[in-house]
Length: 390
Ligand code: VNL
Image (cartoon, rainbow, N blue to C red; front, side, top):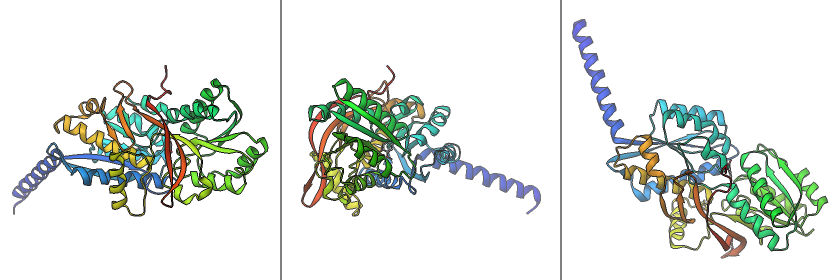
């Protein structure tokens, strides 16, 4: 081949490669799912990945003529890593949607990139109120700590709990939980004697619990992120706090369905407020739990799984509504206002705030068929995030 012909051939090959790439590009719809698959928050990643895959298995991977591709990335729950992965997914993979976000700092680190690239960012786990305000491209399908904590601030004083110590992980969701619980509890006549904060990474609960024992409140209100509840429960029981007459209360993160069965009978009777229980008595949830358990025999779906499952639904429905032709802004618009029945119960995405509106349930740990469950006994309907700037 002479040189000219060779250059010509190379140019042709490059052009046809580019064309086939762009066809592949046009026929695929890419979801960049960034999750903590290893490290301290790995259970959250495992739950959301399993739920997202279940949603796709149930609903197919071709939507509005597009082949849906899920690209899972492990951010190890380090925000700098989340941000770098998001950047790569946007620039190199040209994802249509970003999703996941196990912890608040990861979501906050990514929000400016979503804004800049006009990429919808579906937050499936992180739950600090302010996240939806960090970018107009954020849509949330998890929950907010403010939603759950306010419900406990109403329930506790009506149920003989007058004096409380709060113990929270010292970052966004913990600070929201502490603030919104306390505000409502004090408004209702309760007294918070002490507000303790433990580090997010590698916390040692022992000295804090010792302090609580000495103060001897009616109850200890706890928020720790999903996956950390069992350690708190273990030390709470080992120190005989329950026998000393101190009740354990909190948002449902503490009696996480992922770990609850391993917490033992000491967890029986613990009351929490949350948006999802594996035991939620509805046909939609039963179907979800059964299918999830079948696909993942060693896992029980928790609230993280539901945030992931519903997040996939919001993405699929936006893709359908835009007939596979929508860019970031059109997809975002189609996500706003979606209303549907989730395994958690009825929910919708508030079109103004892009945040989830759903029921918050009061639940008590009970044993059924030899397993521990959060059994719902009361409900506050259609709860909006109380944590939005007024
Ligand atoms: C967050 C909130 C994370 C609640 C959680 O588990 C949780 C967060 C990982 O916003 O960081 O249960």
